[in-house]
Length: 410
Image 1: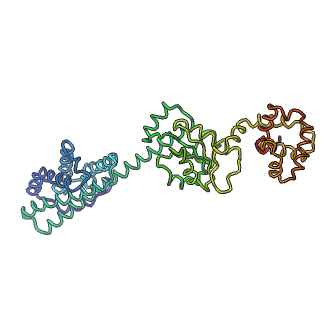
Image 2: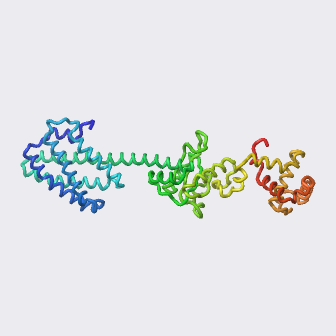
């Protein structure tokens, strides 16, 4: 230890004579056994665990700890004050670390320390009083014993906290690596060991969700604790991107609506639910929808790829769509732009509403006679091609969505 402990400082002025110290040392095995028995009886977490070899191990640890304490008193005047408790404190630190690795809180161990201090004092005080030590010395002895137990407790608390912090950092790193591998589309035989290292149970499905990084905290607080997060080094993302990714377990079927409610108002984009090891498909689709710059719902709901499959299909090859559009609308190319736009708009509505003139008029907010006139112009321009299935298919694809799906400048 780098600093002199309170127990060491106090021991320097309370050295036991050799006779009393030896008598206390002789009682250590009995004291250790009674301490373990009390701990087993009074601490539920240890009631079924301190048996066999484990009981012997704890009993030995109690003897070492109290033996160190007695050695400190017996030789206090001749020891280096910076080191006498180091072995005992190191052992206590390791004990706290072990509790954390076992998945237990510090509550049980601190209770064990309190019980150990009580039992140790009851046994030691009997010996010291019987040995004729003055009352004031016995009181100082008690104070020093409890200070020593406090130092052991503090060392165990530190070991427990450090182990949790270290394990937490390691697990976070493993979870981050797993998320990156999932987004990169690595094979299942690579993903399974990565999930095991991260102590992450693979779900049935994962759904990729794009969310601004500033809005990740609230969804993470209410979604499954097994939700994975990736905010940096996203595949295909520009450096410094402000978009984060959540990989949410088992939000397929009816639970997708629940996910949408959690993400309401957060400018999120939902990919499709996919088998967990194929979530890269979900991620790429969400990214494509985001790149299409589709208007988000006015009610604040997230953009859902399931509602925009047609745009996604047509948007997979923007240049191909632009070429298709140019070829399909070639008969309108010689008209003034405003006229060409009105006729293309009318043709689009006509195709999507299967030629129902009144429905087209209502869609365009024009008189049915206007629709009739415009369709007459279009038949003059296209001729028999308006009845050709191949031409109708190309026109439907070319006009299915506003022209912004084509590259700028077309």
